[in-house]
Image (tube, rainbow, N blue to C red; front, side, top):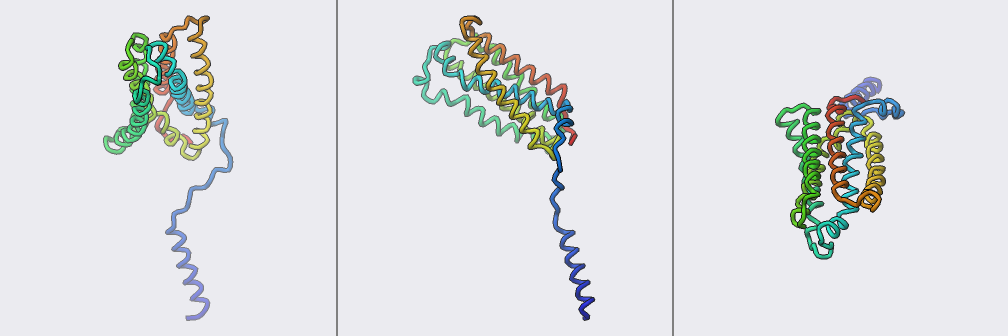
Length: 234
């Protein structure tokens, strides 16, 4: 064979190899912050992340005080019971993702419907438990109720916490950064606001705290139903 023909064959083989190799998607040159913030479905993620972390940070910060002041049981006397609510949350956080995948992949439910089902059921269940918490008078029931609240908001993560990959896979990291920023702000506001609600000037009642958290849960569920989608937007 002549050198010319050999070179052409080599080039053709190389072209076939290049065509067979999957090419990574092109990286976006810029992030459309304005378009993202103008999209209702993105705000559904941001607001639900705010709601989730508001509840989580308040409970993490104030549970020891609640157990001691309202239920008369110091943390040092609770042994492993104080670990149970967060263990339940860990389990249901992982289960919610699995359930979402089964609903979408096996049952054939539409992505948006599956996300809304988990988000709504989780937040509304937590809201119901929070509404009855002020009537609890013993530590065992209190721990079980708190476990139900954290388990409920963990189930909701199968909705809002995964939805950024549905609506904006190209900018999922950017959407998550906005949502997590809202979550951090929620923690700052929530812990301080709870201290005010429990102060003498605000009445010092745990019912105000838990009813407000129930309202946050309900608002999260409503905004996700109204604004969220399972369709790709970006």
